[in-house]
Image (cartoon, rainbow, N blue to C red; front, top):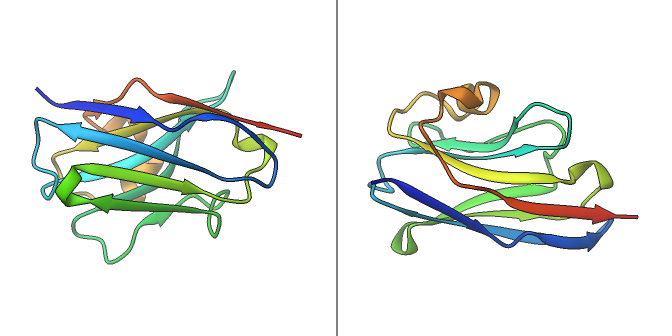
Length: 128
């Protein structure tokens, strides 16, 4: 059974940083597409950072490019999202998701419903 468990959310002031973690189990972490998505109240879920094994580099949404970094620790089966220079509009529930297929990270971030497995999310709140 595939499981994804996120952690690391919390309350931070604008300009601050958070690092989210997502531990995966039940699948091979090196045969994957993995991504971070977020959903703010009243808005649709959107892809933030996605990586597929066929990619030379991760894909980032324009809204987070240069501020967020996705990284993977294969030994720990964990994917991270380092979020710096946080803005109030980054407030959302953040989810990690996995697909056993290898479309591009850009495809997955732009089509969240194409991901097969989801964690339950972790809330990140950015205050002024």
